[in-house]
Image (cartoon, rainbow, N blue to C red; front, side, top):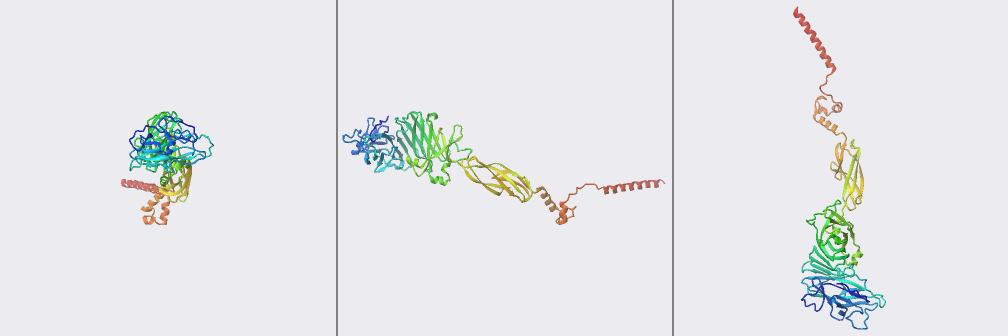
Length: 522
């Protein structure tokens, strides 16, 4: 189905695909239908309904120019130059389903014409109207021809009607759109979106021109309740005439993909699974559009600039996809909810994604203590290299400990992948061997004083020394203390004076023995 572009003073042309096949009596004539024949568009009753008609292809056309075949007044030359006002009751949109439908119009015109219902705009999702079964909304035109000169041709602009079908008592239901894509030239692309549940969407695009683009509207599909939502998916450079794409959201990891893991330790916020029915090469790029409530970002202390997206590759690795925060002006221009923060990311792969927050990760990569031995009351210097291996900048307090007890702190601020060296110059009084660490990372052992001598002195004081004076009480005196601190006498040595005495006694014994023998013989 192709567009019939007309060059007129002011012409608006709308096309939707499908044939009307419903028994609802509220549709009282030929109509153009879509959304499984549950939405019907037809000229309104009354004189202004002549501005809308079904063309030869049974497609609704809206023409307020002199070329309109329904207006046979030869004096009618189209909308007067400089006209500003409304034309009410031009066409009707009727919902024939069994639930409810939220209906609005997407239009990218230059402002010469707008669409109104009961005097209020019906353009953009925030201006939608809700239709009950067999209920109709009558749509008119708000005209502003401006300063155009007589006979000036303003050209043709396409618009689309979007309907979100909601089950009674539910938050989400089945959504359908049928519209020409702005990037497909004269090719009629029909887009349909269905919502089996609040966290699932089924997208179908057909009639796609080779190399063109398709925009799917997710209408706030839930990723984590209302806090995080999928707003839409855009496919660029599509080679197939028809594409199908299923989407599912969850605050928890999907079983087949597992939880997000990456060297920069990002914090996962929600997960999105995309299942296409087309080959990856059939699409040049995919843009994912999602949003978050400011309250959620504040509650989790998340800076919008730190929100990112990770894509799980076929090899099972998680790769980061750059995310852009959408400007407020763009949000307003696209008719997106202005009470949310909007994000978009472009990727070339389709599988499982994780919405995440970049977080800092401070690590001590190297640390030393010098000198390694000091006297009590002297200072030692501990140096540590700290690296931010995370994805976000931060400021962190680094703590020096001795035997697990805090000794000193230093504050360091680092950008991602930045390093800094912190130094602690601290005095230690307690004698002993102390285990030094920085933020839990072991540095080494610092010796204060002479732990071995201190231990032996304590042992001698406890037991006393008989050789130094007899009793433990004596060892507590000043004289005993001085003796303990002097050289220690080794037992088992032989003194020279003692050796001479022994030799003299031996000589005397030998002489006496000789005299005894002589006397005995005589």
